[in-house]
Length: 171
Image 1 (spheres, helix red, strand yellow):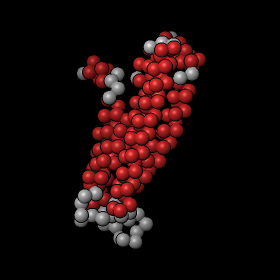
Image 2: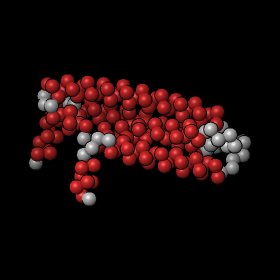
Image 3: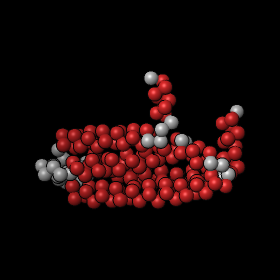
């Protein structure tokens, strides 16, 4: 069992998969809570389906764009970087926790948005409080993570910091 866990810990797809499953469960639970709660039409948290659907579609488009542009440009930088310094730099970067967790968060947010869109097909339910609040908060966190990730990458590709990290890992 310990061998299996160690083998899975080094796989790139495990962290995004775990985030995806977590956000899938979160979407199902939030929808179930929203269907149990009866909100008055004039309540401050009675967000209509007409607000949530465009928000989720915008979230999906924004996250796909962020992931595509960010990770493809970073792969170009790292490929150039590994060609100039060491091919090991590319692998070292891909197994670090920050890139995998950011990619996992974006994967989870995509999963949440897609599953939540499916739940909006229910004609009997027109107001969604929890699904909307989680969507807005998650999208804001995603933008903060994007900014942090850009900062992290700009720091991690500096050769002096990379060499310091190699020395630290070797000792």
